[in-house]
Image (cartoon, rainbow over all chains, first blue to last red; front, side):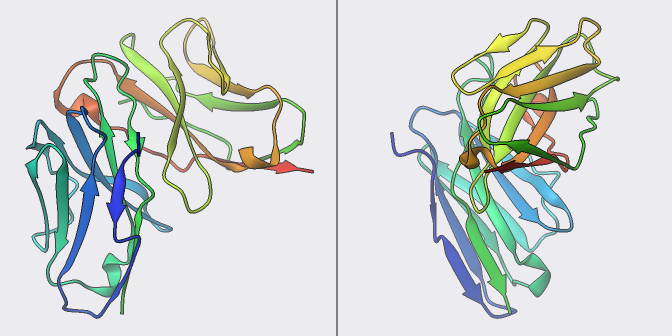
Amino acid sequence: DAGVIQSPRHEVTEMGQEVTLRCKPISGHDYLFWYRQTMMRGLELLIYFNNNVPIDDSGMPEDRFSAKMPNASFSTLKIQPSEPRDSAVYFCASSPDPSADGTQYFGPGTRLLVL
Amino acid sequence: DAKTTQPPSMDCAEGRAANLPCNHSTISGNEYVYWYRQIHSQGPQYIIHGLKNNETNEMASLIITEDRKSSTLILPHATLRDTAVYYCIVRVANYGGATNKLIFGTGTLLAVQP
């Protein structure tokens, strides 16, 4: 299994530009999570999906952030317009049915720098 | 979910056992203890979890005190590749809803010394 796949691995953009981060979860996993990690705030959960439906988006910082999961094998996190304070590492994770063990499997992350 | 407390950093000699403590004094009866680690520039990696009994897998052992207010993650023979931030997380073991969240704290930076 290839694990959770994220693209791009690195993104440098200018303030005001739209940024789209992509994630392919592990096949068969029903849950998908988006996290953000910064030095100041650590690792924060932004949003998670169950069977492609957003369940909890209380961690999404503001309306500039949006996430979609059009099918079981693909999700996007979009920032529009981007700001320098959005610079962070964004991780995607997936999980099988939590009645099993609830383990989350993380991707390698996307390092975003907004100038 | 209950709050956890971990030391900010620890050192361990290569080849020796690394014992990482975690306090979770407000843990409830249906809350599991999870351990993840994050090696520099990588995503977090699941290590082990438990409810009441001690657990062991190919990576580590988890010792949970009888009152469940604290636990210790044991890496039996630490190597340089075990240098990472280790997170102790308490999670309610229900199905669906907000209990699928993992709330990461600041963790313990374990430095394995040659």
